[in-house]
Image 1 (tube, one colour):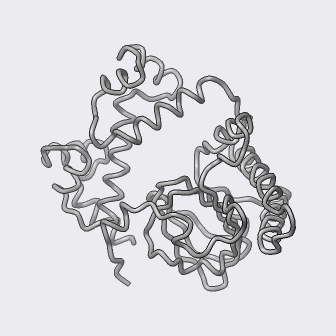
Image 2: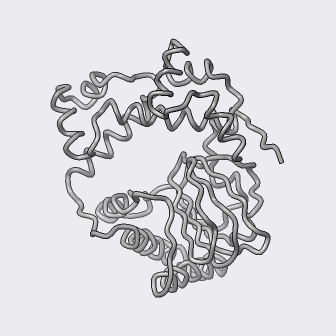
Length: 291
């Protein structure tokens, strides 16, 4: 079946209410059965303005997040950050549990800081077996039961369960414990600045000025703490967004270039080819053929 591509749909960060009525008192955490969400109210592909966690208990198929396709199977766990583009195709017998939340404002300052740091996975996918699978499955099931029953103070328990879920996911994903430090605050500020301005500002000097430091100082700090140079991070973000628009929108290459702040479409094409080893048109043909 040919997939329709709509630019406006891709630009929209869909809120939780787009996917159905959110029950509960504070609406901070939503827990639903995956079998009720196999055909979402918002057509694929789409992106959310909230965190989206899925645990598979049974089934098959695939789940694609930002052009990385993962197998759907028992014990698979997916973790989507806000603004990531995703789609899936799962067998009719697929079962699981979905946990969603908009932000960590429900937690206190120190707790929020620790959980924010834990929400920095190096990947969006885990395949769990044995005790890890059992412990995660039990935690998801507990959250679902609390959410559906709505007993007194159930949302307090949901917050506690959510904190446990995030920390366990981080532990299972990473071989070494996460160390909380001042680096985290710097990384948060820098990444937020990139996210807000990558379409309009591609020069390092802008980001250095915005963060109140010299260009050389920012370059050294980013290299030391993030393992990449500033220009590379800006370019990588532009490339990711250009891939999303090429794959899921009907914008022309020239329109995508302008959307991302490139005044010369030919320069954008050369830039894209340099970073991806293919030109935008061929990338669009390839990814749509796969989809």
